[in-house]
Length: 93
Length: 476
Ligand code: FES
Image (cartoon, rainbow over all chains, first blue to last red; front, side, top):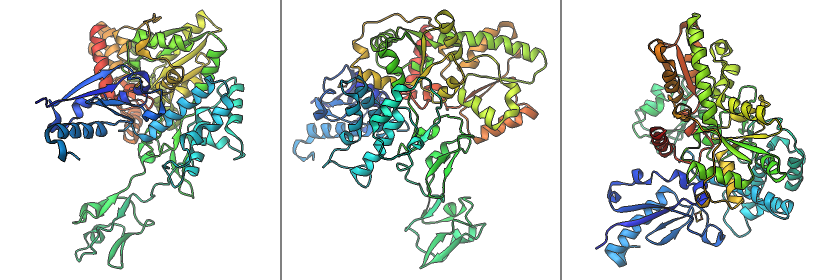
């Protein structure tokens, strides 16, 4: 079973300026339960910043799921959800 | 969270919208619509209602156009009039921070508050320990009389229920010189005679009620009119944008700058001159010399500790040296310093060589509005680059390290002391140093704790930026 989540923080200029630059120490901020379980990557513009329908920058993708207006906390919560989904399936609400 | 929170993001969003409006076909209409577009009907409000939010946003837009909220004489003046007036502006005449009074939530005045966790116990340790007899019991609960309370905090320590909390006023606590305080209505007001423009309150206020007056529009106008503009990039640019320094230079050229120069080159020259000046002064018997590069510190000396002035180095700051070089070669060029610093605006106001000052936030807003993605830029040339010494300026201890390297044989005499961050205690120590010395003969003072990488206008987490700087210095 694949037990790590992929987190892509967009570092295109729009996302970077709107806050992604402050999220780049995410790997150090991860709680112990997520250490070694998150595969953190930077990403060029994810191509979603031009359409307000997608929400506000900074954007990130956690296991392919797009998140907007992200913070360290919201990314951590999304990682927990993604892992719970994989492991438990139905009870992950 | 100190730099990146919703308050900070809203401020940046306003800057982006102003830059977009400027670049659009109908800027006046776009400008007028900013508050409505940011708080449309049927959407949530941050405050009591969208109408108050919009009014606050109007004032934020005014600040982003370079005006102070106090400039509003007629509340019905539309934003487009401010926009037009901003376009008429030829020179920057004032850079003082402005408080959006309606955004200020008038934080509680007394620092200590007894919460409803108070059990009105028999012991009443709070009352017994209060040296000013400021605690009464009403309806079986302790209350603090604000007139008698001296904010000593003994009651908080004494309460066995942890029922007493301290409620700070973030801007007042952040201000190193007590320049911000409440008026009769409880709203914060800046005393500009005392303010050193360090920008700490701007970062600290959770309501983003304190704003800088942006010079972004002046720069956008300069670029649009094809006046030759030279971007002077502060050494603290490390980590502030994605991509390489050469790509950042290319992004600036795409925005219309004629070329980009690294202020770290000016910093190298500052080091050479400051080292020579130090040798001369100490040789002549001076007890110590302090640095001159941090503009908030210089303002603090002028306004708070004038007796320290004779100890401050006369060497121009890296920005001043870099701007002089440009103006000497090309008197008609427009110089735009770009950095993390709010106080540089004040320094530039008194230096005719520096035309405008932008923060990284403002430059970021211009890039977004201009649809320039740094990572997609083909590298361009950086003119005048610094060495490791000048590049190391933006962290506490950087100036000291560079000077030490420059001293060679005199290095043994060199006894540095660093003030990493300016607060009232540091100011007091500096004041005392004029009479009794300070245990060293070279005093480096940085107003922002950690150095310029922690300045109010940064876009990158200071820890991450610091790591990048270390890498860069290892490679320089
Ligand atoms: S910059 Fe992040 S989606 Fe475009």
